[in-house]
Image (cartoon, rainbow, N blue to C red):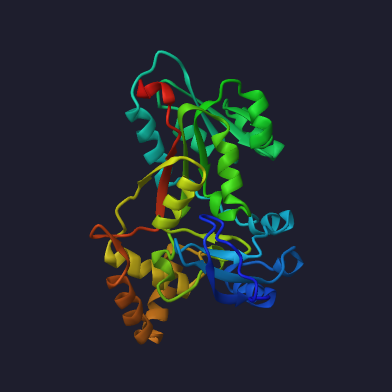
Length: 327
């Protein structure tokens, strides 16, 4: 990787500093330790480097190149890849309830809806019509089979199907995967009705489980960007939206420490029982007592914002102001 040419920050377009090289061979080695099955060596991706923006602190990949579809076909062989629920789904539903009643139906477009788990989370929210959007017809069919409304396509094609725009566009753990986060959010912005908003979640980096271990799934080619609060605020300004971040309470010190040790002891994708996880955790801790204390010290010194320990995820709400509301 040529570090002589400095790539611009994909969030704020600021200057950046080189952080580390990530050659393909090193990526494959780290993935082999994480995933319980082989095949990564056949996936389409190359060498990367990591850069940090000097203005907003975003860490990002160079090149900003997404892996081939074969990479995700390989990765999603594990049933543990997709979570059954997310904190931000409940937070989003609460946000929608808090907007109050309306004299007309309002629409939520869930981009990358998958099998419809978030659509299901919105079933109890009155006054909102939830619509799924996915590029995979199999995902759309899965939603339709459950009685959800869903359509096949991307954001550009959705504009032709949704006259008048939508009040909310949701993107759950999508922004960190894409090569052009600004372009993605501009496409989502074009779908918004006046006064609408984009709601999306990303990991806050570094997450607490990376205290003394760097997660290969929070690095290229899987995650091309590693977000923090200033970078998200700069991103909102870049796409002409007003930012509001919903930041949950972090897990307890004990939970964060145990989780950070657990991912060192055993892959989260390993198909083992809870008893076996506990056994391996204890064996790892007893074999590496210095690592236990190092992990604990890292958690005690974890980054804070307004006195609160930062959690591992954030819900970003990017608002499009309604000019009519000013009069």
